[in-house]
Length: 562
Image (cartoon, rainbow, N blue to C red; front, side, top):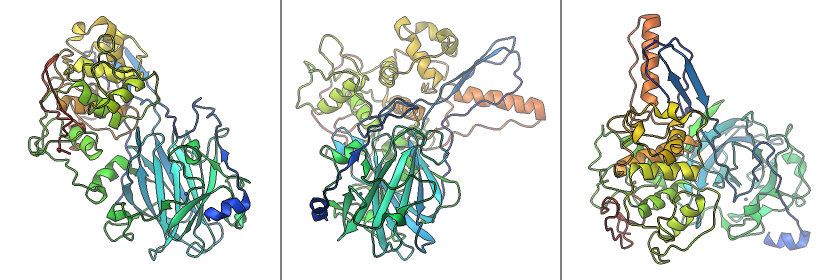
């Protein structure tokens, strides 16, 4: 079972264009006191991103897409937007010893405003020693990745935990000479922005040891208690005198260093994380250059990782429903939910409070402004935390003065503007050139034209049923918000790309490529395949909103009556 990551967006090939073609885009305690360990907390700035590589920082990423405008003289203009995917490559080493293969059980603890979500299983992977595999999509900076290691007889041999950084992360786990007796793992990792398998020069290298005793993990501050040379790998930095940790591992409520409470097999873990490898799910054989889509793995394993049933199919969303892919994916990621009766209510409007709850689950961005107290949002309101957080991230503004108007339904323009402002997307080419793809471009208000152009340039805009009609002032439905939100996640590499004829630019690219291929080779054009993939915001009743200004008292209810 191997999943190959896909490019976030289709890039146009060079080809001859007809003169009449249309515009296109697209981880004992007593040892610490005895040894007097000290810990280095890394605070080195990433020289390529000018962002601190600390747990509480997140680098906003952008995707690359190309928009090509064509005139009757076949003149073309190409625009590129660079992107960085939050992901990691993982290699396992044993410089001294005779292991040939190990099993890495990988899980993720996603970062949220309240701390970290419970671990979610990402699969059991059988590695050959020195082998590497890449994992991407569905992650964000500050998420914590947990790796439990087993030998091929399913004996537990070690534990590590590391933090996703602001760009691609390269991670090395080094085993002791006798892991079944000496459960110590060295973890060495850092930013690998060019994805060449080595930590970028000048960036922070995090380097520390984890030791397991009586099924409890200790994050050590030094290697003084054991022979460190057995953990030295050629090509990696020498073992430091004191460990180097991300800031969040040493400070705050969720610090791990000098703690003895980390239980390898806590009773509140999903059964799949307590069972031996291969018992509940198939072990995945890692081959050279293996690559895995985490968002897809989360979906594949949803039935074994959830403490409660996770609904991703809905009675009112047919197999060929235009937004099924977007809805199902977001449901699997627990960003959206359905209703107790099994429906999704795709045509229901979305309120500002509901959208805030969705944004809170979807993004973990750096705060760009101070928290304010909205007159119409009390601290007891079901969406208070979500509203406060997304406001600080820059997504939703006050309406008048200090009013938020939480029950007001949103138009498509409201959704688009909120995404563009929150993600700080700006257009890099002529606004009019980009917006000419819309037949109703003249109806887009002047103050928002550059924002809509920026979203269009990144392939975020989804128009149904007519891909050329923006319908900016129309009240946004749950299905439309699902599509737009998913595409926004896709634009910064958090999820895999979904093929849909309603994504502005996607269908036009395919059409022109088909026309060119036909004219050059005399073959029938290839058909675009609209693949199938896809929950309402937690803490609300997404189906009782009314259009702009309408009353909607959610009363703190959730779609599942939780």
